[in-house]
Length: 331
Image (cartoon, rainbow, N blue to C red; front, side):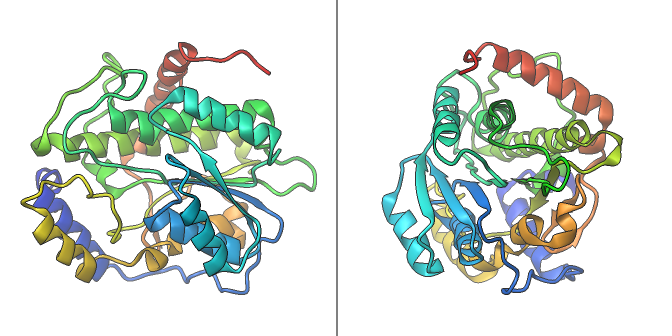
């Protein structure tokens, strides 16, 4: 479908449905018997939808699951523990729209869990119109990209997430992105991080742009953590396809009566949509590789813009310069 059509609400919904109906999976779901006993798994946005389904699956496989959510949501943690049969599910509070809150989460992880073996960066949103984060950035840029950049920086700096060495297994970092990144224009480095105003008509353009930032960062992170091709940290990104979740909770009231039944009938249930995330987290071969992009249950390259090494290096430096304004001294 043409890029312009993907940038409209109707075009995006119809395109997502077409993708789900037309794609033929080339990857098999990870068998239920595959275990990750003892691994510490951090999942952001885990209180509902896809993130909650991922948390249940990882906990059921023996992972110690840390559910990082904006409001705490203790009932979500109770649900995950009950549905997975696990007693190693914990709730952590974080607001990814506030970089100070991300720092606080990392402080808690350093003092509590001590390590993260699998990080699933899933939290996402799509506001009806442009809003500012706590530090003044456009909200999707802040949540989908900048907060994740800070989170990974801190996990690595604190030693909570440790690239492998010797016999130690490589940790995994999984970014839940979107095929919408293919509709985005090249990243604007001349005005990087500047607040961009938009309304309902242009919201999907901003969403695609934020996911391009995420996919480009995932590729650059993979290159930097794995010099010479030796996989010391498996970094992957993916699009789970159309998911019946609350991502469209801010859709206009006039559209909700139309969107709700379409999403319920035509979009995948979160437990099924979680398959590519679980593949990236648990499939044995995905721990020996890095820089993989999945769309539903197919492996394919991300967009050429996301793969561009020059853009990746510029994004790395530009975002480091932004985060330097919000740096905390080492503990």
